[in-house]
Structures are given as C-alpha cells and as structure tokens.
Length: 297
Image (cartoon, rainbow, N blue to C red; front, side, top):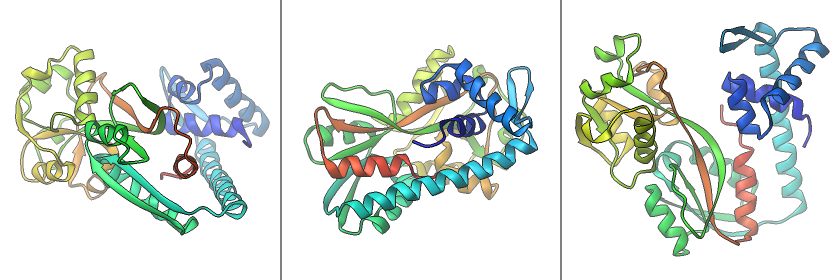
C-alpha cells in the first residue's frame, strides 16, 4: 500500500537474488533492478556488492534493511489496529495446519492475533498435508495451511510464507565437518525420512528427481512422522535428514545440528493457505491478512 520500492529492496535483501525476488513480487527482473537503482541514486549509496551471480548487502544495504523492517512493522501495526478499531470481530475459527507449520510457524502468529482480536476463538488441528486437505473438503476446518506440491480440485491455494528445506546432521558428526557434498553422495548417507502423505516428503522427492536422484534407491535408515522425533534421532546418530529451516533454528543457534551444504542443489517451497473454492468467510480473510503481514524474524 505504501512504498513499493522499499518492499522490492527488502525482498531482494532477504532473498539475495534478483530473479527470486522478481518471482516473489510477480514483477520482472528489470523492474526489480530499476527500483533498487532508484533507491541507490536517491541516497547516493551502493546497496549490494555483486560477485558474478551472487550478491551481498553493503554496510549501507544492511542499515537500510534494518530501517525497512522497522517501517513495515509500523505499517503492519497500523493496518491491524485500524482494522480492529473499525470492526468488532468475534466467533470461532477452525484452522488446520501441516506439522511443520503448526509446530514452528503458527504459534506466535496465533498469539499475536489473539492479542488483537480477543473475541475470536481459534482451534488448531494438526496433521500432514493430505489429512489437512481432507479435513477442509469435509468442512471440518475453515482454513488450512499446508506444505507441498498438492493441487486438489475444489481447493483454492494462496501463498503464505517462503520456506527452505535443508539437509541437516548432528553438528559433531563427520558429515557436518565436510565443507560440501554433491547430490550423488546422498546415496551413501543414511537418511531419516518423513512418512508417506507428508507434504515435506513430496517436495523433497520432487527436488531429488529433478536433480537425477532416485528417492527409492536412497539409504533410508528409518521413517518417522514427527520432526521433533527426527531431530532427537539426529542428535544421537550419524544420520542426516531434510528438514524445514523453520524447524531447526534453535538447534542451529545452539550448535546442536548443522546444515550440510550441497553443491548446486537447493529445495525451496511455499507454505500455502487453502480454502474451499468459492468460500467467502470474514474471519478466514481476517486471519489470512493478519498472518501474511506478520513479521517473521
């Protein structure tokens, strides 16, 4: 609504990639470059250092990013507070979310939402992507938030949040000590995998196949249906596993788990809101708007 040019800069600064920023903002890459250059010209500073295809923030870019985050935080609170002032929202909102979203993404959003809209009572159903879609189609929930490539008839999908799936291992393991591995080396690594029906597993398998890896031939040590179980197993083994970056932030910070870098290989996805086609529910739209503007740091 306000300064789109600043939003463009913030997206590039977060993604450190002009092409990905253009895709996320649904504009062209030249348009992204133009907006960034206009900011640089206005302040007479350089915001990004470029080294081939890679970019990084300059000190001026780091400073602008800090201020941009503060500005958008003010905008977010302004819109929420005006919305709350203009309307008295109440009722029950039934949300279903896939495991990663429910455990690591939604709790702070729901707490902040409840602080603003105390008359709205939220219930949260947790399950894998397949289960949440079924609950939505059966009208057991009003809104779903899922991961994965699923596209079912009768469901409307919209982007909520960007995510990256990374290969992680015990920080003390031999694998974690290596600077990087290539995709073919995955065949030699014991892996913990999620259960069938998991949106995360679907995304992982899709990415592996695109990079010439046959998931059926991988050395699967065990299949677990809980991210927490996988993390605890990793802390007591030499295995590795593909997990959402959102689910391992604490363990990475505490140096319990480490990301295993893979050459020319990355897995990115979106968490998506799902609604029944044709649904027009005021509480659902209010929560979607609130969550989409939540500042994930």
